[in-house]
Structure formats: structure tokens, C-alpha cells
Image (cartoon, rainbow, N blue to C red; front, side):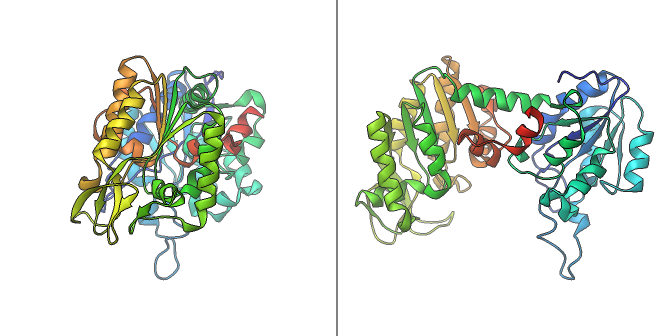
Length: 400
């Protein structure tokens, strides 16, 4: 951040969309922790920070009478935890615009923080409404975007608000800088061999990513339910596995493109199968192209896991997005765990490893491996679109 924050009020877009339990306690504070360095730098330089964020989708999940469920989606639940993490005075405004927000922002002293109420209590936020963005902009002297997880959305607080600050008075935060730097490192002149690991349920969700991988990958490892669409396209028997029957041509065409590009595509040789989609399902290991009727592939099998791990450990660059199976069910979490451990092993040998996507990140966090890979992205959809080569509105708004 090339701004001197002394005596300045910094309007900071953070991503505090954190999971809460039924008592509104934070169950994973990763996003708050990741934002702390940016906020602390502002405060340590003698500035004050006005934080804006969304939490959940309150407009879609209203009360039965149509009113907003403010108790469930208020950012007030985060104030106590934020004070503890920042070791600073944190005020709260029960609106993100209007008289109270303006008054509290104006009264903010250097070294203090003001947390604004959920920006998504207003439909103007997701619509990218300029008048709403202008009201937000009026609260601060400078604008900092440190919310990579929302950079792919042209919302008022992530993109449009930047229009009301000149180039000298807007910047990325430290987290955004790291996200962009690491994703760019993985894509532009990466150390070879490059292995891209992808999982998840649908080919349609990941086909743009897979095709982009062909530009720089040596190996592409495909796990998750999306693998069974490829097996079906190759005339394999996939039982009751989740497939996209209308995407078989896309799958076939991708395999042809990969062969022409000289990129090795590994599909899982075997699968851990269940007789139902449930944690208490009966389990057997089957060849992935010979799954019996009534059974479904819910994780890559032990042989596939060994093959995938071997390729990952021999790589110099690894990009991983998406789980290998139904990671939230212990019986089908093995493949994802093996891939996570292989990424850590590759890192230890000097490889650059980047993990993105909710379940992949959850896996490295649960296994306490987040510090043993090179970089863990905070942005699921944003990281996916960045890796696909798309221009993200939140980044363009700062870079111009």
C-alpha cells in the first residue's frame, strides 16, 4: 500500500463473511485474521479504519414476514472478536450509510476502527448502484480493497466505490496484493513441471479452468464427481455416480485438446464407492470405469491417491482447486487428505504450491497444513475466475 495513512480515514473493503454457529460465535476466523495486517498498518501509521463487508445473503433469506433477519446477519457479532485480534478500539455503526455512519466516521480518532453494518442489507450493494457507492465513499479519505473473495463481483462496495477516489487515494490491501502476486506467479512463467489438480462436482463449473490449464500445465489431475463425466464419455460404467450427461462432448473435446497440447491428464484409476450419498453408506473400492449399478463414486481410490501424490511430489509448481471426494464425510475424505499431504511434501522439497477453493482450503486447515503449503487463497469464486484468465472488476477498479 503506497499511501501514507497518517491522519487519514481509510475506507477498507474487507471480507468478513465468516461462518457463525447458532449462538453467533465465529467458527472459523481465517478471513478476519488475514485482514489484520492491512488494518494494523493503517492504524500504526496514525490513520483510522472504516471497515465495510457483507455477511451471508440477507436479502435472499428473509424472515417469514418478509423483513430482514438482522439478528442473523448483523456484523455486530464480530465486534468483540475484532477488538481482540486488532488490539484496538472498535466502534460499530448499525448502518453502512446515513447519518449515524457519517457521524461515527467523522468522530473516529487515529488508531481507532469503525465497523459498518452489513452492506448487503441494501439491494443497491449487489446492483452496483452508483448513488449508494457515493454514500459509502463519503465516509473515507482513501479507499483500500482487501477483499479478494469478492473481487469478481461488480458490487457497490467492492468496485463502484473506487470511482469516487483518484488513483493516488485508492489501493489494494496487503492481502489482495498477496493474492494477485501468488496467482500470477502460478500462471506466468511457473517453474516446471506444473501440476494442476482440480475436483468438485461439475465439469461445467471447471471446464474454463481446465482449458486455461492447457496453456501452462504439464499434468492435470482430475478428481471429484466431475471425473465420472469423463469416464462416461470414454464409455465407462459409472453406476449411480453424479454425471453431467449433456457434457460428454465437452469432456471428450477437452481430452483431445490436452493430447494435442502434450498435457498429461490423469483420471482416478479407482474410486471409493458408496451405496448411497450418506456418511453411513456401505463402502467398496472399484475401478472408476467399472462401478456397479446402485453404487456411486464418492472419492478417488487408494491407487489413484498414490498416483496423484506421486505426480504432485515430483512437481515444481502445484495449483489445487477442488476436493477429490465428499470431504465432509470421513469415509470419503481420504483422497483429499492424500493430495493435501502431497502438496505439503512438494513444498518442503522447494515447490511453489497454491491452494484455492472452499473444500481444498478446509482440508489443508483441518490437517494443519496451511503453513506447509506456499499459499492458501481466501477467494473461492474469485480465485477460480482469476485462474480462468478473466478480468475481475474489483481488481480493474484499482488498477484502471
